[in-house]
Image (tube, rainbow, N blue to C red; front, top):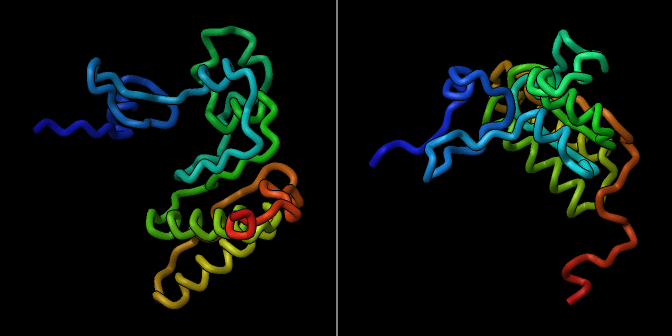
Length: 170
């Protein structure tokens, strides 16, 4: 069976920038969400958590003039595209992150945001504490816990505190 996975190397070879979701089984083309698609969205979500290396960095071409020409939309980074579209909250990594710690960071963040109903700032703090203590216990030198940057309202709740919990609603 042929390997159907898509890699970032494939995207680089085809000069595509964005999130690679896989390969279309019929056409074989990469399924990529790029800045161009983000600019076409009617509405952006309240939160984007881009759990990928360097995902909060914006390019050297930052500035509104680069986006006046439709051909230049592809050159925008995803963070730039979301910012220019008016995203309320964007979380991304400022540098390379360890995959295992990044997964744990996301689990902790969503646990605190969605299930414990904490603010985005509180949830990020708890995820940082949990991930940094994992690093200390493993005696590895890793800065994944500190890589995540939040642009937006740290006091925002994704799930209102007064909403009934799922268990209570049943």
